[in-house]
Amino acid sequence: MGPVKIAVGQMTAKNDLLTNYSTCERLCQQAAEAGCKLLCLPECFSFLGSSDQESLSIAEPLDGPLMEKYKQLAQTQQMWLSLGGFQEKGPDPEHRYNSHVLVSASGEIVSTYRKIHLFDIDIPGAPVLKESRGTAPGSDVVVADTPFGRVALTVCYDLRFPELFQELRFSKSADILLIPAAFTVPTGEAHWEVLLRARAIETQCYVIAAAQAGQHNEKRASYGHSIVIDPWGKVIGKCEDPLATDICVAEIDLDTVSSIRTRMPIATHRRYDLYDSRRSDGE
Ligand SMILES: O=C(O)CNC(=O)[C@H](CS)NC(=O)CCC(=O)C(=O)O
Image (cartoon, rainbow, N blue to C red; front, side, top):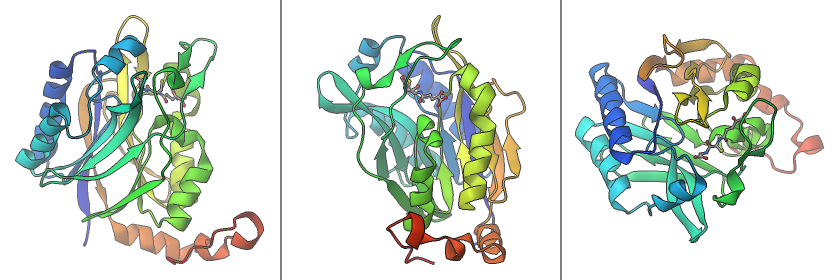
């Protein structure tokens, strides 16, 4: 297959669907001009509300008009889109899903992952967030095959649960981990890059992490620092300005994945018998 160019996007989403769509459209044009096959957009790419009620009120089903616009964008630009966190209409009127949707270059939804770990925290210096108030958790672990490798779909706070990533690599044979986020500033400063590099190293996967950045409203700001990491843990792409609305382009190559895995075969050294009931049958 050889190397493939991908782009990671960074933006400051607001509570305005049209403005955010224009931003995503611009980032997608930039990615297309740079010759990229995939653009990864952060959690809340289409909307970041200033209240739960507001985010709930704009939730739509995946066959609704808003997702339709993004599918058309993918098709127009012939770009695979990782849409890192969409307010999908949920199981009851009080709850949405936080859904990571993968759209192919022909504008079809290939896979949907509904965030399984919800961010209910109270940390000094950060806003108190209780995601479960307005969001219902998903219950599936999701990978999808693409022309550039097998991708794993996750969202933001999932990053803190290494078991999920072990499952994605050793049971579901992922090559590329997509980890879109809207990290808070204090937790991002403390943990963002080190956790992302750890997930890349311990799974021997590429990590592509698109981030919300900067001030969204009076209550909420995000850490930014969108990043691409190779399966050796090396940072291979970062936006020049960690808070700007921009893309960063990087090359991913599945030969690098297999070469690292051959030289350090952790999949065969792993003691599935001692700490995991599941066995890998893929490798
Ligand atoms: O609420 C929304 O509108 C969309 N959802 C989010 O922004 C979510 C839940 S509040 N944010 C995170 O998971 C941040 C995790 C984080 O910062 C960490 O793990 O340190």
